[in-house]
Image (cartoon, rainbow, N blue to C red; front, side, top):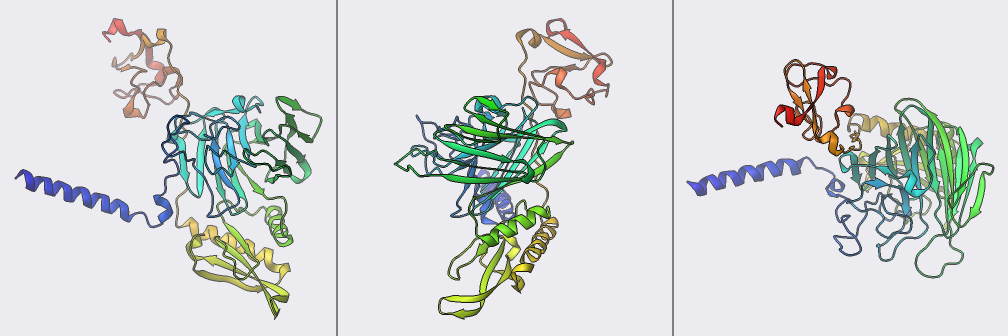
Length: 439
């Protein structure tokens, strides 16, 4: 009888697991980039970091919990993020090169790495190989990012404030920044590297914003520079400010400084047209035998081929199956486009991407987990009792029935909080000593 019962339980368990496995149709969803991040110099549990990238991409991006120059740039046990860093790091022992970071800040202007760091929780963090999102509790900002082969796209959701900032940190050992307010752009380079001898090494970057700046500052080491939009020094950075409305989000695009002319035109067109491109992986194929991973591919071909060269080039726009950049099959969205109509055709292809996904995917929701304020010893002796039914709210245990986590102070309860027994409002609770009510 016991053996039969065990067999039935095993079959039920296997059936349950099988049904969960069946829900995952894309292999990339099996990957958890946080695996192996609970590491430190004295003990390796993988020595990995949550990289957001496409296969063989030029730029990888990761949240940065460690200080500048620390090979353990993201550690699972950390509770603060200092920035979102472009990285080329192969391992913590080899360390990084060509890195720089970006960080949203609200309220008081903070640009030093320790000052701008914001508390976060893994409950409000989503890490995928193609996407990273997190809620920064101190800044009250949700940050999301995704990448293409040579670029990245950020989306920041700010609260309503006239003190919203983006801090760009080009790191030390030689860097350069320049703010171009009229173009809503910041350019610069980082020369930082950890191994070898590379005297002429530079990693260039261009950052485009989709909203005008209300503030433009640069900074050098630990000093704010308000009278210069351009700096070159050991350690430089830039700060741009914005006025935001409630739940106001905007995007920024990060690209390499030197582009092929076609790519420049396309990027400028999409930017001027204010075409939303968040989450779209766009590739440009200029060589027949090259393989480009992308959701939407722009393929150049000659009308007249002469040997290995050609004359009078036109462009095809190819959409991957399900717009999956890892797919090798797809369909032709439009063929034989002359250069002057290419940008408009690409815009239409991007719109078809969003039309397709609007019925396929739900919006990614990142929980807003607030930083827990610990009670003092005196406060721990106090509980709060409902005057109507004598129900007690103890900060140590919270109120699970009302969705209130343990260690939530009574003062931090929402105004809408009600007694879990008689529905009395928050102002019907009075402070009492635990000893007086037998706790």
